[in-house]
Length: 400
Image (cartoon, rainbow, N blue to C red):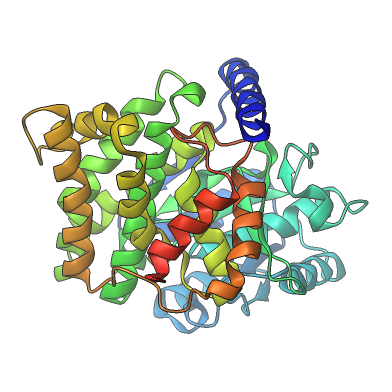
């Protein structure tokens, strides 16, 4: 009885939130795209009247030729280059301290989702010095103007260059949570395919599967759709099925790389409006606790959760399968092909079908975190309680 009442509350919350989403003005970044678009940074900063950007990136990016060449064109900047995967609260506070001490006036985040999320979280703290990161976790708890933000993705997956979310890990508890506010959407997204060419094939694959998960989960969350959301999801899914294998096999294929950046961007716009779902809620617990890369966790969980949803998602999955030209037939047949196609791509990319690190001893905590993230916010086809999340996590870990 308690679960039924919880589900009723969740659906009522989602109905009200969905109405709010439809009346809020949509905000997206200005897009600069094409080979060597990175060279436009200095021009953008001059146009915006910014004199001292803070560049936030990681140790791999800072050694790259394109990064060194881009920095040579900047008159003045500060650099934080120690963002690691799954950025934690300590890292964010270090960025805030440097930004304040060196009197920076904007952010340029270069790299994958971790680098952009760390910079976004830092911008939230700068906008709200009166609030801790934990206090801003959740939805619409920043609500103040943040510094000008340029996002430069070097992976095609997270979509963080156009989303309103920053995912952070608590350094003490290892709880991974999200700060969601429209003010966190970057002002500019620079989509330069040249920057993704050096990405190792496996990272190309897992980040691409992250983008696919965004598009699929957003498509299933119909209560939060704006008019443009379904088209963004469909276009992203079709492009990923077509171009991700090409980017994986031929890393220097700039056409495939650019199309994957566009697909990731569209999926990011879609889930900024429609949210993600139970796949992400479970994946965040795996990433926070075991430091499993987010895209890898999503790739493993996506077919498991879609299969678990069963008939609830047959029609929308069939729609996606037909739009992507990967299946024809009844809804049931097309949905089954769609899920199998995901498994086939995972196998081609060398992505395992389970995550060995998952431990039975951690399931209670993981399920609790997943429920806390998913409910009541995510308008998923099937609402999961703690026991349901534990069953999914057991399947993902192949626990008996």
